[in-house]
Image 1: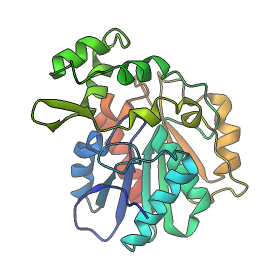
Image 2: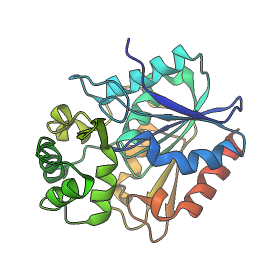
Image 3: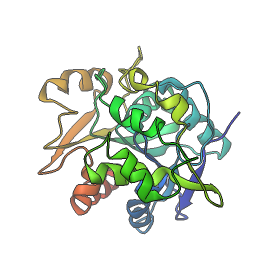
Length: 259
């Protein structure tokens, strides 16, 4: 069994696992994790398979990613965890809630619904797959190449956090781009479970994001009958980075009400 890489912050008895989104990594959540650790949580920042410092695998599905989290919990003897997942991480969290209910206490899903999505990552994946590190020798050169595929500088900055020095003078990507470049359909998959999760859960939506629509309330309630929803005004899909103070207040207050 391969084990997910994690960074643990805090020493509380209440474990909170955070799952990043597609093409992200656990480090994206370090600021929030440090703040959460100060108010009573032991925060586990998880790198999902084929991301960050976790293992690479040709097998890539939400069912497998949910099992990875279950294996992590069982290895470290974690029980009744709190779980927070953004985007892809939210889909993993939903699968985990439906399939491993005994390990979960409550969860927060950030700007994603249990439905099937038509994905739009193809151009980004094409650009990342085209990075030739035999020729590209700096972050600036990588950014310049990627700008042909991704116009938004802030998105490129996020993606290029995956760069690292494999050896002196040789860059590489922490993500397994050879697998992820063909994963658009997988990332867009809906939740597949015959058993709803009765755990307390909160869906947090960015007002300017179209990932959760008003019409999604029915499918959310189908899989998560005890779900509540909250909207962060003037925020898009990256609401935890765009409105960090408001986001932190919502997360900390809701979890406090559960625990």
